[in-house]
Amino acid sequence: MSTLSNLKWRYATKRMNGQKVPAEKLENILEAIQLAPTSIGMQPFTVLVIEDADVKAKIAPAIYNQPQITEGSHVLVFAAWKEYSQENVDKYINHIATLRGIPVESLEGMQNMVSGSIAGKTPEQLLAWNMKQAYIALGTGLVAAAEEQVDATPMEGFDPEALDAALGLAEKGLHSTVIMALGYRDAEKDYLSGAAKVRRSKEELFIRL
Image (tube, rainbow, N blue to C red; front, top):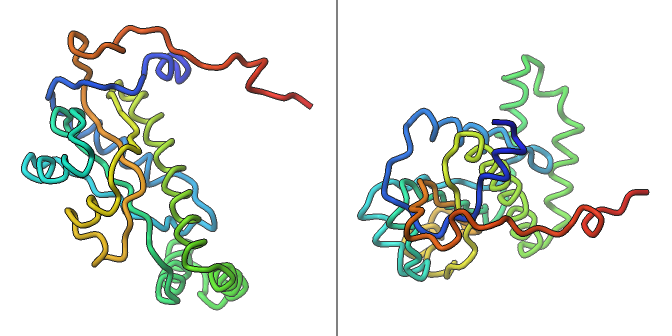
């Protein structure tokens, strides 16, 4: 199937059948998320990959007990960094130098640019910026899941503070941003299975200049 065919196949699955996503497919989806572009390339978020049934049951109330959490194979919680530190910047710059085999001193201009971008934002602006980067990764993961013929449901309907508490995210400097449930659709229970995909027309959506 082509990418477009796969995107037409996917939908925000409401009910899943409990079937496990094979390890290879899961790793392909996670690698796609890892490869997603982010502003300055910093990837200012962490993705929690939750498979354990007890952990899923623990977090379910914070996600309003939506069935995808316990019926699905895995739950991915995209958690944005709550703040940056100079240590984050230095680690990133050193990582670039190591991977590309160049002197870290040659990246001084980039290091100053990154540090300046962070210094010019309030904590609230930084968190909002980081959350936007997590959404880019979410979108990439949704496309990758479709390519693997794995159902994926993006979820914003949850209590971030309650989820942060359940997973101990505050202590890690993280804030839950968006969720993606992975699994396989239960066509008999899901009223949206087989329903026509509803999107605005290209004429309405795009302005061509």
